[in-house]
Image (cartoon, rainbow, N blue to C red; front, side, top):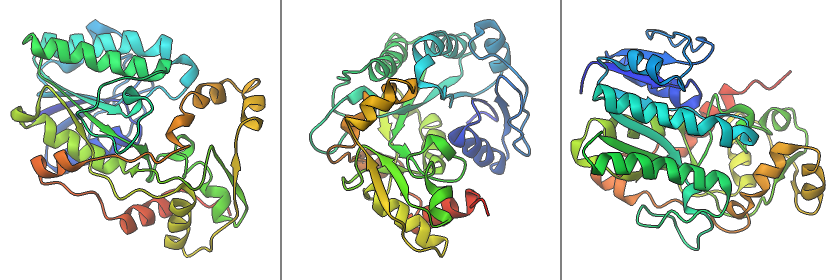
Length: 310
């Protein structure tokens, strides 16, 4: 793989990826709007990645362009993602860099049974259709020979740095203080959780493997846990006892969402929690010989990566 790498975004996946690439001796640049990524050993300039020309200049000479961006405000996805996705794809095409995309499971929409890469992208909500359109545009460019592209898809993240964007880490600070917590939608349905470090490992492996390009791969992840089980496991790793776990359901959630716009957006994804939501990662395990980070290790790093507020 080429020595230079450009990472767009410094969330939990972008930072984990940058650390892994630096550890492998690569020249790494992590771009964010603020320029505050501050990953030891990597450059961290400020750059608006939706500026196609500026991003292209930053990507010149890079072997891989990684899309690890994740606009945190769901209510602005429809405005923020289209120009950003267009600029990322154009920069990869202009420079010849491999385009490695961090995706998610939204494009599949509601499913029955484990999710595998052979399922159609059949999302019924705006966010899922948007993510599906991003992959469709990139795949089309790949099929036309204009760019080399690959997308990796994981489930909800758990691990250090995920913070309030994660269903478990959002409630973890209070749980570490022994307080009851409230999770959204359900606490008793099996759900796959993915480590950002495992997303990063698959991004690197898929980007450097020409035979992996042009398709989606699912991130090797641990067996599913319910939200209550996952939280209890993380608390155990921190030496803390279980806490009472309550659930915010409709119609209470519907009422709150009238005044909290982000909850309106999240309600469109409630299908992910009212039934088993399980990732089938067998293809990536076989092809790349990768296994997920052991669950106990994920729980320990999650527990130690979130301050307990005391």
